[in-house]
Image 1 (cartoon, rainbow, N blue to C red):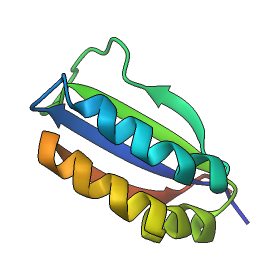
Image 2: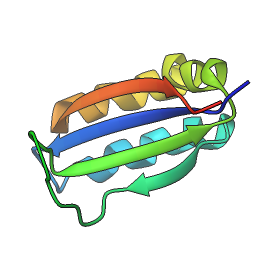
Image 3: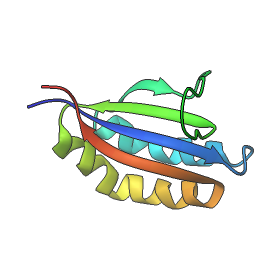
Image 4: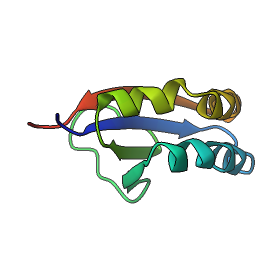
Length: 96
């Protein structure tokens, strides 16, 4: 079973309050074994549109990635994120 990933592109509207989301999401990340492969960082747009932050989070499989997203812990954090940022968010399987 291939690993699965959250690929999230984020435009933060309130940088001072955005850390509230990160703190609220931490329990979900710990519970589901999230491994951050990319967390922000410098990037260069080669084609198309970009957002301020790009994040790639690895999970052991799609079921775990989805369970983290659907968890009570992450749902509470997501409400906070949506107050302070706009995001494009997908869950995708890794290469077999």
